[in-house]
Image (tube, rainbow, N blue to C red):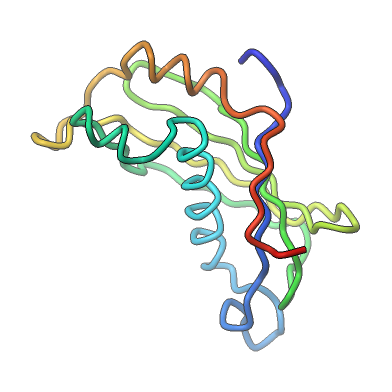
Length: 148
């Protein structure tokens, strides 16, 4: 990776994402990872469509989440994303979620994708140009949907 500074994506915890305890429900973190990674992929590749136009796509093969502190309704969370391991046909992204404003470490996650050829739904080697984009990442880029 050329720069170790992560990509930043901010979003607000919505009322419907909270459980009876008043905190973001654990299953919603898969959604939080998904929306954060979508913004990362859009930034790194220019658009998701650019991947699809090459008859390529990515499929999740593993997702782990570790919780450190609760997130509550209307909290602004900041996902910080960096590439982890980039293998022959798969790659892992590491995410850390912090509460914006007080820097409370809320959770971290690792998500692993396998590269597939869309038309055949079979895994393929990550092409060199895509590998380079993943390795470069989007250091220091901030995208916010939180309206802060």
